[in-house]
Image 1 (cartoon, rainbow, N blue to C red):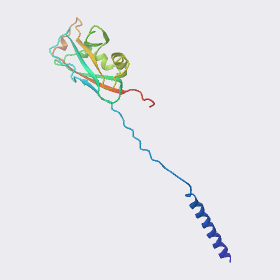
Image 2: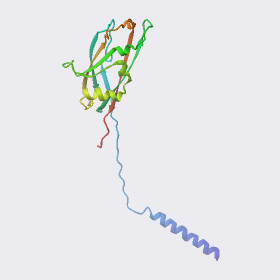
Image 3: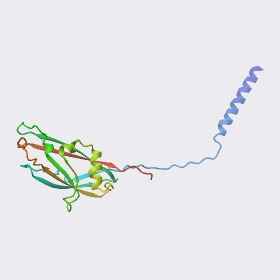
Length: 194
């Protein structure tokens, strides 16, 4: 008899559990699926021409004005343009006691109509020591009117290079060559709530 009561109790418990579990699926339900997409934009800064300057047979006192175009070919507005400067000097005679880059003056000018208006003036040596963010603040924010470079826009950058005649003996630079590399970096504008 005890076995019957235990068996009957277990059977009742199992039936109760099955009713509880079965009952959890007895309510109304509905579901909808949404399809969502996140597509990232692109930053694409181009410089035209890619070779800004190539001159030879220069002497102290020579200067060269070159202009090139910064173009935003991407789908996102460019917030900042950063410039890194590096150069190497080939010492033809092996007698340099000074850095040739200290004798190449660089002037960033406003535009073709206002050559006499200098935005910023420095030497290649000093420019190579500046942080790109500082260059952006001192040069590109001024050139781009603090607005950056919107998608599809372009802006001219005019640069004047001068082999400075310092009135002293500069014979150590005869035959030397300086290879300049400018690397431009485009940074997006700050993200926004959309």
